Image (tube, rainbow, N blue to C red; front, side, top):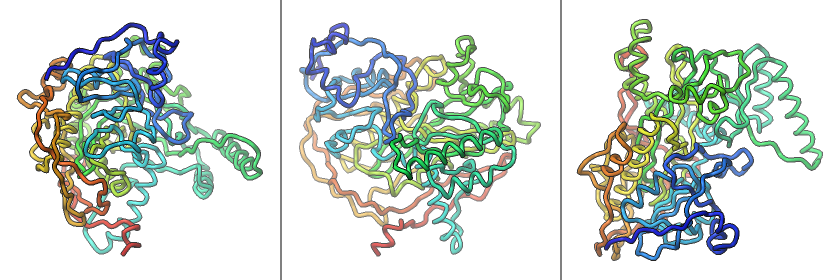
Length: 557
């Protein structure tokens, strides 16, 4: 059945001024996002949102045409916010899906929102709908959440490692020393430790884009912070009316990073949780983010220390150097081969081999730390941006993990990379979703091209109850991925879309729907990844399996 094109009227302002008040009121949780191809970065967490829910960008959005309520048949998709909106809209519309603009509607097939509203998850229909962002992804994507998960994992592994050869990385091997300032014991421990001239970086737990970050470069700055926290604590104890400060962490600043042409940089990579029932995870290469000016550890200019595009736009040189602030991974690999390989005894293509495998290992360890805590329903999926830094000794550090990573395409490299990341993510999510509904094996994956499979949980493995499927007629609500011609990084975004997947044809085939209750006890599985040190020599591989039982499971026993 053919889908009629969506008719649009100009000037959305007329809606807000009364032209269509019902539709204006429907934008209750999320603003209808722009379908423009270029969007501003919004890695999601507003500094004003103390509940850590992802927020829409504050910048003025371009006007978009006013849509009419779709009159054609399903499937429908809803987009809230601007981050990735243009790409997701193009992807769906090219396949005959129709966009709806009322967040209260419950007849959608796909909902892509950067703002997480409780109502969205309350009305979510498991096994019938796809929903971007796992509801409690904050345990991985906030500073305190990730720190707490990794600490708990390390405590558990220290106990079980005495009686087994099961090993994970120690936190000190990949995560900077950190302290929580919202806990008195940790505050006191930090201020006791911070007596010498060292550089620390202070970050709000739920902020993004560099908001609220500052450096502690001397004892005077540390004393000022200590006095401010002490004053706030006294006001709270006296029940003096005041706004509670946002929770923060302090991390030891890596003041000797590896530099590219004298500039500081970090690497953005992607962790795709394509399915949570069962878990199916993928890794995707991203890009390198550089500062506009040369690195100086003593500088008070935050654009020297923070590499994200939001901060770099504040640098007066950004308009001239915009294209130079983002590198492809292949460019980065060639640069390391030429400038650092011989002098540091690195193997050839260190970036694409040793470094890439290290990033994958760290991502897996972080996921395993949160695996038993994440909410799981068939239809939940998430794309998480992971930021890594390399120091002058070629040690790899995880800086943070970001929900709703920036999907802007404001320079050539990003225009080549981001569309393929979005399109292949959606292809994989849809293919796995449909296979689960039909009771088919997840592997092999026809749409897998540039992503790397990190982890696949058995649908009914040891420690899990088998998921029973019931069949019922389906009238073609789901998209079938198309694999005749895979997409390619670096190609024209329109061609990448054409090579991604095709329209859904309406059919009456039977598919399976999962029951709502999912067993939370699982087996902790680490995929086999051969690891190498910075000289390219093999390290001891991770063990394949070990049963992991959460404290809650122990109590139930």
